[in-house]
Image (cartoon, rainbow, N blue to C red; front, side, top):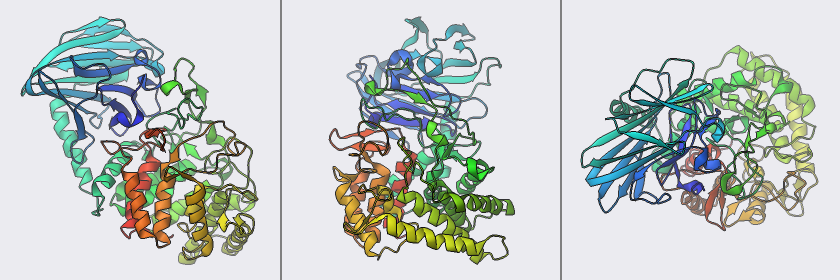
Length: 597
């Protein structure tokens, strides 16, 4: 059985990410991209679905290391093992690739002489395909179909095959180092050039530290903010600038439940918050790359706008179930692809317009084609905003008039109007958009507000609540001084409370999202509550909630999508960009650097 979600650290090369457990096992790795088939899939099954474990020979299979941490300012993970024989360290990292992805694991003797063991099970196509293994020039080579993996050790370590796995036993004394390098490449191509693992380690540390030195945030939570920024960078697909929502698929929102989705794609809902995080913390190059990815992804017929895209802007993300995987702690089904990509979510039009507006306000230049795309989106939205949709949370029930969707339609019109007011030389129907902005505002306040409880609701005519309404003051729909904003914050805090944190929405009516079962507290929404409390003047309560949320980070500063307050464990895909974006945004807000747009 896989480790608890919070037991994992990550390594990556800005094109994919591997999950490393405290017991020294890489249980998840997709090669060559985030969305490729996994060659290690024990995370969603068992070791027979692929893993790579390095640990002291005396350690039990699930025994955790003594301690672990990232080298400061890097994505280089160090796990220290203290045994009766002595102390050894395993250094895990992936250098930013030249052509082929490399996973490097350096075992270093610290004290005494420690016997170590290796178990490597390569299983291509999400743990389904056992490759053919052979020896070539001191390497062990695995080949199956389009995939080929080469494993070598420096200095060489004798290895042997047993039960469709590769094993090796060796020892390290104080000061000795043994490096293991696993390299993937297409099976029809020649082996890539060899990379010196020890030089690669030093170069990787230098690259990451140079990147981290650009961080402009110097507030009281700098360590947590920087770790979140490094995590967001690790979730970036460098060739395109797209940022995936998470590195995994099908980690459950409820143990043994069905809410298991593939998050290895790029969501538009994250666009504005991501852009704000990158610019405010000093990462203008990444902000440009994300903005340009966004512009490429949404280009085309506005009627075909999707809520998510592939790493390079791919539109076809067909969903299927992998019935040979047992699921994380028996949580089924295991899915790849995401059918929600074809949903109608009106809020994404507002997210896109808001993102481009924010980019311009930060001085990120754009060309005339960018405004042409935005104008086309508004031409579509002006007739569609009255329609029901699936909403921000990708419900699989019937379409409804979700309040957050309408608020973001208002935001789209507002940003279009304000753009033309600031840049009157641009072409656009400013009078119509201004009228639309007013009409949407009046309708939301009339149909999406419950005067008896003094709160905005999840959808028109409902009694249910939605944590997304916490964003109403942030997007500028109403000022924080408005009693309806304060009432909504209080109602969400009271009625969506889950162990002191926040659910996304009311779960009692399963017809809304069309799915059985429940889920944990949603961490991004809990950060939104901290933001909202700060905005309405309850700074002490906001800070207290934020610091409780920081306490949910695992030992190396990572967060999944959700938190189970009863079982005291993380839930959902990992690490979750939305959670880490929320962490940084809230730190900025509490430091006085966040305001209504």
